[in-house]
Amino acid sequence: MKNIIVIAYLLNNWKGSEFAVAWDYITHMSKNNHLTVLYGCCDGFHRIGNTERMEEWTSRNSIPNVEFVAVKPSFVCKNYDYSTKGNFLFYKEYTEWHRDVRKFVEKLVTTQKIDLTHCALFKKLRILNY
Image 1 (cartoon, rainbow, N blue to C red):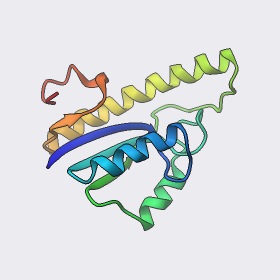
Image 2 (cartoon, rainbow, N blue to C red):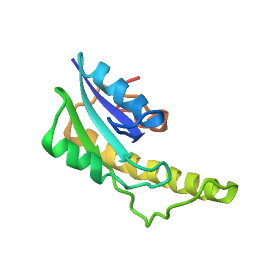
Image 3 (cartoon, rainbow, N blue to C red):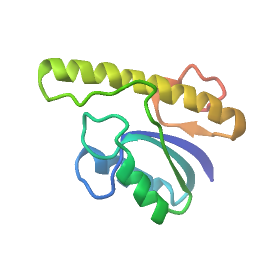
């Protein structure tokens, strides 16, 4: 079994669309791999750090070979609308959230053996195999 880090900004087992893509990936990949799933939102697309419902679910439930980790942003998030300006500002925060995830992963790989990460943001980490 490989140890894989999965970066899933949106994660939810009871919603469809973007939320369900990561959930389906995790449930299938966990059959043959150990997964550490880093997520940033489980409810509301433009709400980085809104992870309470998923944290509640993981406190009562589990998936074999999966560790769920909510990565909270290091900055204050705003709830943006779906306007052009709102989307621009959201993606600025989304990029910042990925920087937070990168710092988290850099610390994680010093304590755990990681074989693979699926996110291209980490190409410069030479310790990860692709």
